[in-house]
Amino acid sequence: MSIRTILVVLLAVMFGLSAAWGVNQLRTPVLVEGKIDTAQIVVAALDIPRGQVLQETDVVLRDWPKDMLPTGAMSSLKDATSRSAMYPLVAGEPVLERKLASAESGRGLASLVPAGMRAYTIQSSKVAATVAGFVLPGNRVDVLLNLRGQPNDETGGGSTTTLLQSVEILAVNQNLDAPAENKTNPNDLQSVTLLVTPDQAALLDLGQNLGVLTLSLRNPEDKSQADTRPAVLADVRYRQEKPVALPDAIKGLLPELKEETKKEPETFQIVTLRGSQRGNVQVTKP
Image 1 (tube, rainbow, N blue to C red):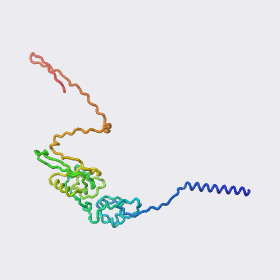
Image 2: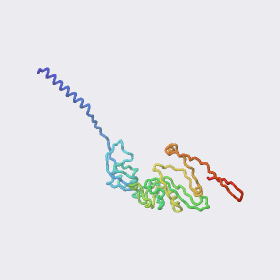
Image 3: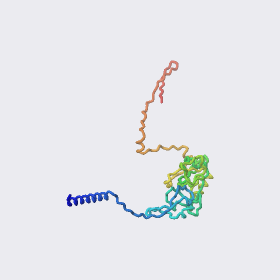
C-alpha cells in the first residue's frame, strides 16, 4: 500500500471521529451550574394544631430561596419557640410571625385573643343544634337571639333577631382545633366560645340571660354584613311566601309539567215523585 493511500485512510478516520464527536456534543444537554442564594428560615417539623405552644422539637431551620422568602418568615428557632400557634401548621410550612401569638400572651385560649377583643362562651346544649354539629374552631357564624313575649304584645308572642354577624369561633367545648373528621357530635356540644368586641360580649351576656342563643353557619370568606330584620310571631303566624322563581338555566334541567286537562263537571237528572206530582232535579258532580 502506498504512502498516499495510507494518508487518505488516516485523514478519513480522523474526519469521521471528529464528526462523531461533534454530533455527540450537540445531542448532550449543556448543564449550566447556577448558584441559588438561600437563607435559613424556621419551618414546622411536624403538624402543629391551633393553640399548641411550640417547642424546640416542633420546628427546624431549612434553606429557602432568598427571592421566594415569605413575608414575616423567621430565621431564629428561639424566636419561634414558647409561643402559641394561632393557626394550624403543617409539616414543612414556614412559620410566620403573624401565625404565632406574642411571647407575652402565655398559652391556651388567652393567647389566641387579639388585643382589644374578648372571648365569650355561650353555655347551652342548644347553641349549635341548628347546624347539626357542623361548627368547628375557626368557622364564622351569625348569632341569633330568640325572645318570648306576650300574645297581646306587638310581636304576637315571640321574636328572633340576628344579634351578631360574622363572628369567629375560637373553641368548641374545650377544643381549640378542629377534629380530624371535621364534625362535632351534636350531643356533645355544651359550649361555644366566640371572638367578639367588648360591646358584643355585653350583648351576648344580655341575650343569654333573657332568651335563647343559636348559631347559623357562614362561608369562611363571607364577612359582609347582611341587611336583616327581626322575625316576629305576629308576622309568621299567617305568613305565606310566594314560590321562588327559578332561573332559566335551572328550569331547563327540570322535566316539563303537563297541565291537566280541565274536565267538564258531570250533570245528573233526578226524577222526584210527590203523590201525583212529578219533578226533575239537576245535580252537578264537582
